[in-house]
Length: 156
Image (cartoon, rainbow, N blue to C red; front, side, top):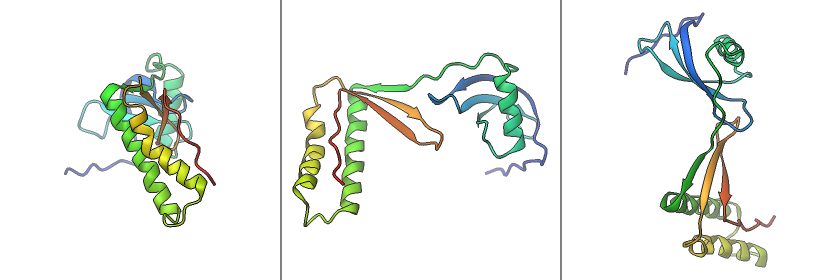
């Protein structure tokens, strides 16, 4: 792997194709032609609260329209088999979470009901029109917005 040495004062030749990548419009992805990187265009994510001076400058120039109009945020939408696979993964994540938090040999009635509802969730939606939209938040994590899925409420 080639090591890229980042100069103290990062500069760029140009930037293009800015687009918001979260619904709050606090993250922007754009292609940047940095002077210190051999590739002509590299993908760069910027935010107003970035802790590097060049990120603040890129943000300011981008929102001022210097690199063109910023494309609106569009959530990634998954349907069909792909959505069902994601649903199975989300259910497994929740089951693993409760196994780490709860004493599985001494579940309350509410905990048992919740676990059973999770266990049955995929089977109950096998023929439903399930889709999921992924929205990115400021912590670089996905927020999943499910359609036609009612998640059980986790007891305290």
